[in-house]
Length: 131
Image (cartoon, rainbow, N blue to C red):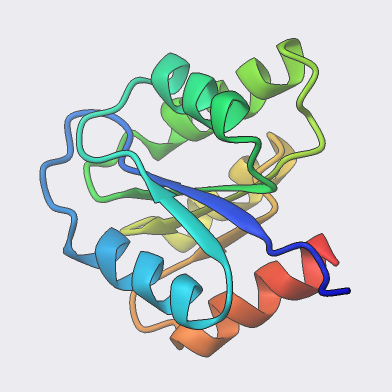
C-alpha cells in the first residue's frame, strides 16, 4: 500500500501580480511527488483558507513580493485556526526581509524561503515537516 501523497496549496495573496516563482515552486513540489493546487493571483486570506479546506491540503504555501506578508500571512494562519485547521503547515516565500521572519514565525508561519533557496530544500522541508 502506498503512503498518502502530501497535498499542497500554493497561493498568491494580496495584490501581487507576479507569479513565476509560485509556479516554479508548484512544479518543484509536483516533481517531488506532492499533489499541488495553485489558486492563482490576487487571493484574499479568506479565499486561500476556503480553498485549503475544500482541497483538504496538508500545507499552505504562500508567495508574496508586495511587502504585505506581515499582514496577510498571519491572517491566513489565524483563519485556519478559527476554522479548526490549525494543523495545516503554513510556509511562505518571496521578497521578505530577514528582520520580518521572526515575527512571521511567531505568528505561526513555519518557514520562510527567500530568493535563491534551492528547490530541493523546500521540498525536503515540507516532506520532513508533514511526515
